[in-house]
Image 1 (cartoon, rainbow, N blue to C red):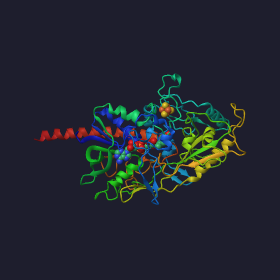
Image 2 (image 1 turned 45 degrees about the vertical axis):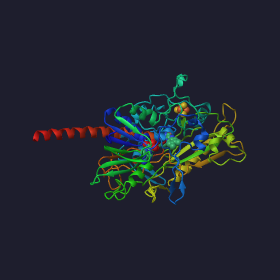
Image 3 (image 1 turned 120 degrees about the vertical axis):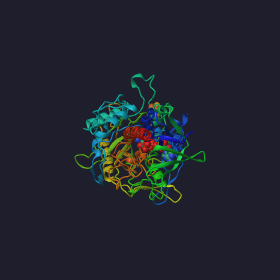
Image 4 (image 1 turned 180 degrees about the horizontal axis):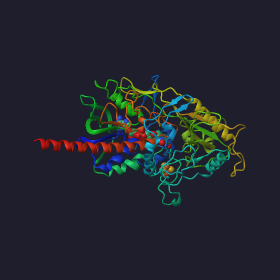
Amino acid sequence: MSSHYHVIIIGTGAGGGTLAYRLAPSGMRILLLERGDFVTREVDNWSTRAVNVDGKYQTSERWRDRAGKELHPHTNYWVGGNTKFYGSALFRLRKEDFGVVKHHGGISPAWPIDYDELEPYYTEAEHLYQVHGERGEDPTEPTASAPYRHPAVSHEPRLQQLSDDFTALGLHPFHTPLGIMLDEKNRRQSRCIRCGTCDGHPCLVNAKSDAQVICVDPALKYPNVTLLTGAYVSRLETDGSGREVTRVIVERNNVRESYSADIVVSSCGAINSAALLLRSMSDRHPRGLANGSDVVGRHYMGHINSVLMALSRCPNPTIFQKSLAVNDFYFGSADWKYPMGHISFVGKLDGITLSAGAPAIAPGWTLDLMAKHSLDFWLTSEDLPDPENRVTLDREGGIVLSYTPNNGEGHQRLIAKLEKLMNQQRRCPIHGRECHQGLFSRNLFVGQRIPLAGVAHQNGTIRFGDDPATSALDRNCRAHEVDNLYVVDGSFFPSSGAVNPALTIMANALRVGDHILERLGAKREEKLTMSVQTVGAT
Ligand SMILES: Cc1cc2nc3c(=O)[nH]c(=O)nc-3n(C[C@H](O)[C@H](O)[C@H](O)COP(=O)(O)OP(=O)(O)OC[C@H]3O[C@@H](n4cnc5c(N)ncnc54)[C@H](O)[C@@H]3O)c2cc1C
Ligand code: SF4
């Protein structure tokens, strides 16, 4: 196998997988290097015990926090990356998120590109990932150049009732845009069966729009695309000038291999891409590759996320719970002028999942009873890019993740808003009583802030920008200091908004893909012209 390619892409998740899809038809020789393997299709894909209790598909890697305490990251190394496990809630950032946004805890900085530049790629990514949704319901939704191609995923009765209750209270609940291949008009032939084990699980029937199914598998149909699994990239090496990556060092089957390409793209996820660049330090790049600005690894963000279980009198028999969301408090409210964030749902929790150490048992309840009566909300607020929240390496090259929470007040207020709303619910038409009232004298909410190990929404560690002094990547996600190095995972975010990140990573990968296509086309022409001139001179 030849070891030189036009493009090497490291990592096959939302960023790398989508980029591979974009570049594959060009005929360029493309090598995908993925440390993981394909997820085995097996019954355990849909077992909450295997997935949530045993952590069967999670990495066994151990990182450390700032204090040196061991950290078991909840992340997954497989073809398709974390999209194999995601809830496929595929949101655009809001238009305002691309500008400066003032938060209670500080400033969320502007991006070097504006929403309009990414908009066509958002549309394309939504179509590619078969997003089901309904335009016009979400009051904070930015303008879009095309409708969703697939109808919104309907609510089951309990969520429809909640949606109606929220509407009656003056809110604007909406259908969560979701990348699942559900055909509700033809359930008999629908690929997606609308099961209860979507969020956090791989899809046994390949009906989730993940990066493997949607992008990597189709890309591999092209003879010019090669995938190596079990291929851990340990280091990138440059030429003497330090301006070009000339060797991609891979550990595979306990053997060290080396590959090269005209363009090298890191898409290992925000934490691992930062770690890779830091590991690739050299005389020319003493602080880590492309890190003259010293921003590589810094500004780690992961959102402020909480799961809030609202325990109601009425049971919640919902199977697929992720259909409903509320953004009325995204930018603030009449009584609080700062952003609070986004309210949606996690997949329906069960007693087995709760036994994995989620919320404490409410007095008088069993875990099963709690799960049968809970509405399981997912609340997301924006954390701000603090340079001291960062990825570094310990002496053995292991990952250290330092993080001090910030901007927490808006999140607390979001929780308080939701609790208040739940206490104001009207009489339930199904059960003829106040469903949302707790079984006890007071309403019951059991909450848990997602801990540091919950790195699902990791981003920000190799930010893009126009100023090489304050960013590592330019607006095309090319390293300021290394001509042929790009990063297309969640690292490039200068700020993270408060909606799930994957669609933005996918849209940006398509955008960067177009840039790379143009660049390599130009380069091939350049080479042709040069050789013609040489011939003419002799
Ligand atoms: C349980 C869960 C639920 C989620 N739900 C949602 C959701 O509903 N909506 C949403 O928008 N987002 C969701 N996310 C987040 C979403 O999955 C991520 O934002 C997205 O996958 C990040 O894309 P990425 O390209 O940055 O990295 P990843 O998708 O993580 O891909 C990185 C890839 O690089 C590989 N890799 C890492 N290091 C190396 C190396 N050194 N050499 C070779 N390969 C390497 C990894 O194995 C992986 O395949 C969820 C995440 C999780 C875990
Ligand atoms: S069948 Fe549908 S709901 Fe179930 S995991 Fe697959 S995509 Fe998700």
